[in-house]
Length: 214
Length: 96
Image 1 (tube, rainbow over the protein chains, first blue to last red):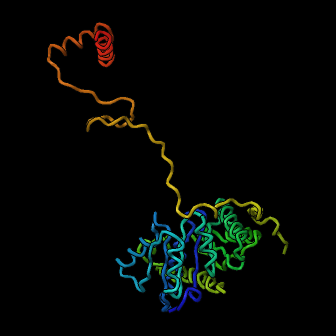
Image 2: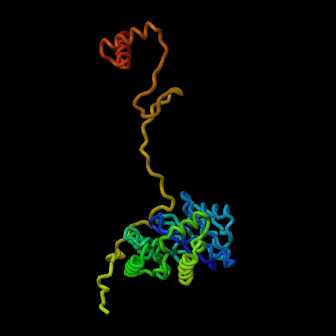
């Protein structure tokens, strides 16, 4: 286990909009980390919705292994103060940027912003990263992840848009599939669906994310 | 093979770096929405109406004769019961 807050890795999932996949990716990463034997915690900062906290309850009820630790926190400071206790602290931020988002971004080794490939989501997503850049967060720590992708064409267009904006985009993407939803409805992660191909797709995106951590 | 890449579906230009809001200045704990408060009438007893503040419940027991007489006057003069009550109170105050 990490001995102090400087050595603990913090990976944050942020966004300005809801429903883009923060919790989905946070849980996928947490599951892979737990399976690798890391001391990992998801800090769910959206206390109004508690998406990951609820998922954790379903996971426990369904008896899914490995157990992934999830806890709700009211503020970024409260969550970040826990970092020293884990190898990896995963922040599942609220669907609303605030002072807290900046605090998280200042501490996190990697800030992942999932986004749907539609302009309605891409525009606000780019603006949030622009704001973080202006606030002094290095672009090398900001990365987009494409989620809910319906077609390859859609994925290519969205990737091009985000790169043109000046930001990295994770290799791979999460396609829009009912099986991912089904899995999560039963306390499983996106790497734990009934379909090997979907699990691999999710796993490769998560690996690309891990590769980004400096 | 012909290069048709220029026909590729594009999403247009992303917002420039200058085009940002002030989201990072927003308080971390979202303030509760301001709900306009309706002026509440002074509470006199447990039965005081509190819904709109415009009127309050007013009820009392009267004799059957008074009720007949009161309603008959209301009907004759096309008054609401509350209007007759108000006039009666005014008349009482004036003659006191």
